[in-house]
Length: 345
Image 1 (cartoon, rainbow, N blue to C red):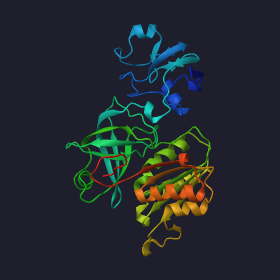
Image 2 (cartoon, rainbow, N blue to C red):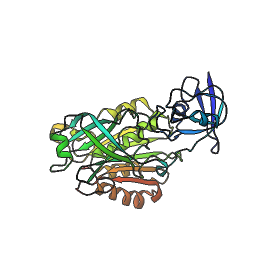
Image 3 (cartoon, helix red, strand yellow):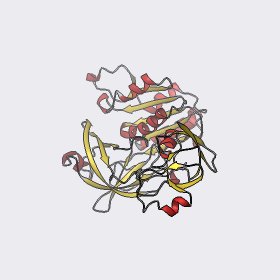
Image 4 (cartoon, rainbow, N blue to C red):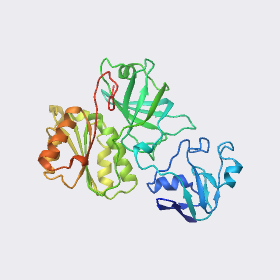
């Protein structure tokens, strides 16, 4: 049986089956409620039942006491509806609404997707989750007090293992160890989610994504989020790289394109090698966008990659293609031993 859940204040409503939790149904409806552990231990998802009845589900009694139940509280990561519900709970609609956490994590796997790119998957403690928006990043907190920032490549709904795409910076304090010493199972500490580069869903404008190198990582999270929630907006991804080997997940965007009529993938190589026998687009990736979209006035652009690419795209998309400045969102990756958003060493 399916019940209707209404969030008081916003008046957002969504359907929830009797055998699923309120939180799971809200996430399926692309409504973000606060959560942490997802197993009734942390209390982050606690809210009020304005009307209706629930099965409270398994949870720690110290997190939701009998007195709190009598007062109308429930843990929405555990509660399953028995009737239609009206609930009162804070909705997460912006990056600033999210709780920034410091958590331990364990590397589960390191996959060399290219000679200088590793896909790293890591896991949080069993009673913890990281709530984030697609496109945000985390900082690894190193023993010497330094930080290294990496964008999350997994969308929020697929957070059992979190994924990073990390390029090797020779001589880099963190990436040298990752590529030459780490075997998996290492314990690290992270802080996140961080950053204002995330997918905005308060518009129906078509989207142009521009990725350079491992700038594909946060854009992958955005696209998989949009496709998972069946956002109907037209989406075009331009992924620029030097040579064919640098497109380190070459088949993935093609599978998105085959499965979704509103998604198009255009790879662009700036310096293809003879052995690539490349028949596709060449040159600078942002120039390929301008050739295809001389008028960007009705679009929104998300760009991630090296500073030179970001700066050129911001300048030229506005001056030559009419893209409004407030419709250009970017994350600029720098590869240096400094701490700032986007640092990727």
